Image (cartoon, rainbow, N blue to C red; front, side, top):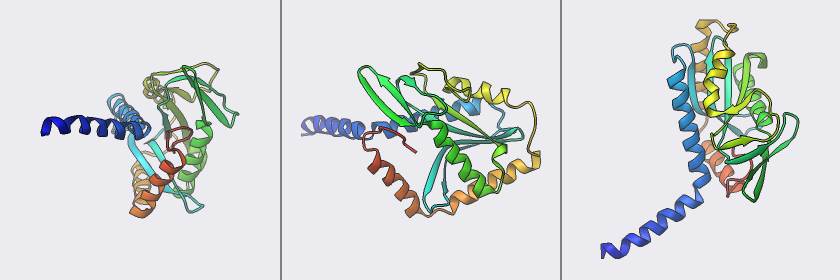
Amino acid sequence: MKIFIIPFVVVFLASVFKIFRPQIKGWFGEMVLDKLLKVKLDCAKYRILHNIMLPTDDGATTQIDHIIVSEWGIFVIETKTYSGWVFGDAKSPQWTVSHYRRKDRFQNPLRQNYKHIATLSECLGISKEYFKTIVAFCGETVFKTQIPPEVMLFGDVPDYILKQSSKAIIRAEQVSEIVDAILEWQSSLSRERKAAHVENLRRNHPKGRGVMK
């Protein structure tokens, strides 16, 4: 009897994976970058926060993939796990990813990350000048247009952060205070609001197209 059940289980699991493939791929990409950051950056100097959800001033929520708080600034990282050729620039409202014959458009991730920084600035009461934006794409991405220096592949992120760490702009004792404040803001969200955020993403992007956060 068990032998006959196995094919149905395999088909079921394959169907589930197909439905949630974008979310799984995005989660895996975030985990890869998180591990890379923790290996290459001194965690005593760079406080790494992963998958932070915060309330916005319009009553909604926003999800931030990675926040790194340091004396050299607050690095806000948006990750993208698209595969293929990426076309875009700093001013375009949308970018394009091309994979074989398929083309998808998605929100300019720099603009998307600016909204994340605006939310953090509002929540913390800290000027935007203390924040530094980074957009990180997975290694399967090839940039086909000239992109801003803040956009890069996963593997280049740690070195980029270290190069940006030449001048301290935040006092060392303030780093822990900022981290604690971010975590307190995140804990202020109820389970219902967090669940509503996830459901909104799933409803608006059922196939993983376009912006995911």
